[in-house]
Image 1 (cartoon, rainbow, N blue to C red):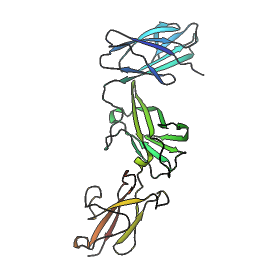
Image 2: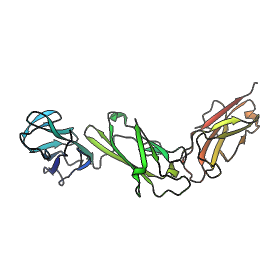
Image 3: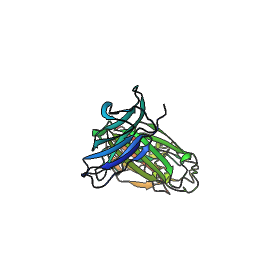
Image 4: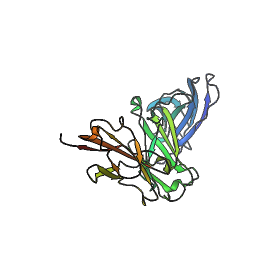
Length: 306
């Protein structure tokens, strides 16, 4: 059954600082902006183009109001799902009312280590990228209700995305790895948790979020090792990588220990006394020109009999 969006007119009691109007994020989902001074709001509802004997329900519970147009009161951050029904009980239309807090601390997602709510990365320059987020432990029930991905200068029809849990995988089919990007990619995600609505935004060039996959380390000679990234862009002479290496004791962590050295090719482990018996070589990669994200550390351990 095709629904006609309900027409809503919103006014406020004297507890409101000003009259508020809502906006539709998607059909039948109305977003109201509220602040701390608002405790209740008066809401006028219309059942679209329908007429006749019309009844209403709020969150599935019958309301005393009847007719094509009604006036009701909603409270701040309380679940509000309104449906209007025909004389036989059939649903004629519905509107879900969500509330966005002005000046309230965001509660649905939490920031990652880089102080972003959304983390985005690309394995190379082929136009594919992924964006992920983490919900607050107190908002596990939150759901993504809408998202948009497009170049700032236009061209959203060239970007396709699929959602899997907390990961959005996208591809810009018009992206040319050898040309300068025309504009940033703009990502917007919209969440609800009960009546609470929050939106999050991020903009980036693919060149800014390139993060090579972990390098694969192979042994060439006794103390000489080389490596490569498994899905890196070609030709390597154009998409050049730099590497950071460090040599540590086998039981140490690559993330926490060691002096870092930046190089561009294979590496020979120093023949120092502390590495005579065993060592761990840690390597990570970065695209040289864009100065983007370092890959996760890879490691190779060598042990010698005492």
